[in-house]
Length: 111
Length: 116
Image (cartoon, each protein chain N blue to C red):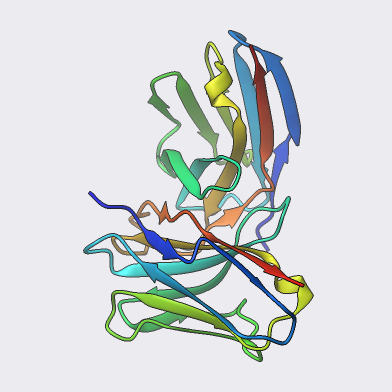
């Protein structure tokens, strides 16, 4: 059974700091991995999708990496801003259909 | 491009009552998903449709939950009767298709259900 773990559960940083969120999964047989952002009371916004054949994806200040063999992904946020405050969720797609989610990292960026 | 639409956004009911949620996916998306997100946890898949057929409902509590997608577009999720532990956010998502090509899933804003 695929399990996804995100560390840390919560993170508080000052504005401008670079930070890394971690995601690990137990079964390396995945089709892709997605990082989402969730604001309080809102749905999920897709940030980056990494196909199983890729090692990283970049979008603006965000960079996500994938190491299938070790079952790990990281989300790097450069020059963090207060508007980045949200919960970040990692999800793996083991079968081409359902996503298996971690429990998320709650990020607070302090002005 | 319009996103995934869901209604209502909030619902409060008493236990043993019934409730229904509605979802309209992104136009042209063949695959539709319903997820349940309990506070402090990641979303968990309840049911997946491909057009109007069910692909995966292995985690749907079928004694009280039902879902349909009659014309392969909109979908409704129903709970009857509701229990206290059904309090959660119900998220609808859609994707162009599903399978090894790894289609991206797009989520709606969710319906927050409180059962008292």
